[in-house]
Length: 364
Image (cartoon, rainbow, N blue to C red; front, side):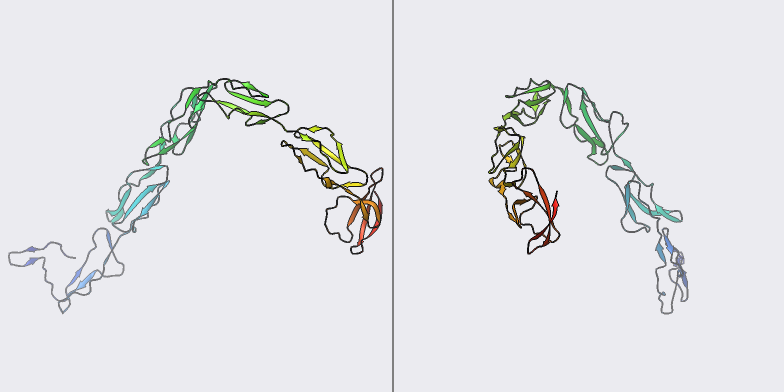
């Protein structure tokens, strides 16, 4: 307790007194914004040595409540929540702050509280997107256009879009919404008739879309379709028809074409092979003619191989056996008699790998 102001009296003394006798106790009162420490007496005493007893910290700063984050934003406490502290407010991307960006923990009656009202984070919006002649945008049914909203423009039939078809709502200053770019334009489509292509023709609606195809024996190189673009150009460019390369008649030693025999073969044609009596086919039975004139799989002279003496069987050959593959006990093998007028197959079981002994199970 005491006074912050003292006055000089006519009797040459100070009022209130500035000199205290030994044993006098002085009490303190906390200023606004501060509270007394619990359990600590707020007093000091004048001692015999003309000094005061230890002056402890009687008062502490009062604490404001947690300000809490605004919706779509956050409150950043700079130091702590005690009297005199400050808090800053920010908003998420696409939102703007409405209200003060900073508040202070200050005295409010006998308590402390945050100054002013808490700000709010408001969604950034754009004006309606501009209309364009002979076109419309995808947001024509929307009432508001918020940050990051996208609208896409399309044109009426007979008109083509020039420029990027889509624009989106964004912001430059963090407060006002603007569109990302000017809207595109719709221009009337006026393309000349597409040039004809040698060894081919086109169909469709001139001035919009045409479809190309080649005559028999020719292959299309390029896009099959071309669209009329704003400015009078066709895109993609007009394709060309290139003559397809035929495949020569395949020839294999000790064999012949069983199905599809011809002198030349167009691209995409298939043939089936067979071997002469006494030979067995190794590899694929079919091949296909490619646009570059090759047969795939390639025809090799070793496709038809002669029959060998196998385990006591003369003029017989394995069927569907992968070369160099090991055989195991109880493994079944199928043999074909090479010179038989009709296909005859027998199945044998390996009973001893080292001796190559087979037991005949019977004809199939």
